Amino acid sequence: MTIKQWVDRWSAALVVVALLANAGCAVALIGAGALGGYAISKDTIQGNADRPFEAIWQASITAVSDMGAVTGQDREAGLIIGEVQKSDVRVTVEQMTERSVQLSVKCRRNLLPNLSLAEKIFVKILRVAR
Image (tube, rainbow, N blue to C red; front, side, top):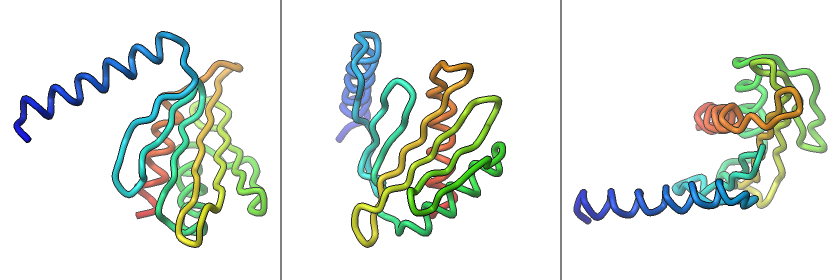
């Protein structure tokens, strides 16, 4: 694949994502690799990771703690609640298979979505879990 073909593909993908976002579409699917892609909604980043539950759970606690504060957690429900940059954060880790989980990060500030922060937390969790 040439650089021009690569740029054309990514440009087309970005245009589609931008159009879906402006049209109020609830979900756009992007990304790839060990994560297997992730979905973006109005206030949540969600994806499946090929890592054990425990690795993602501990990485989630570490990431939220590093960026702000964990204010509550329920391991059985797979829920971590915290506050980062004055935004309310909810991280959900759900066991899918023995070695994969679904990770969701939801952020809201003053009841408004904070998607850029949700993405930063999501990426930090995956980096810590490596």
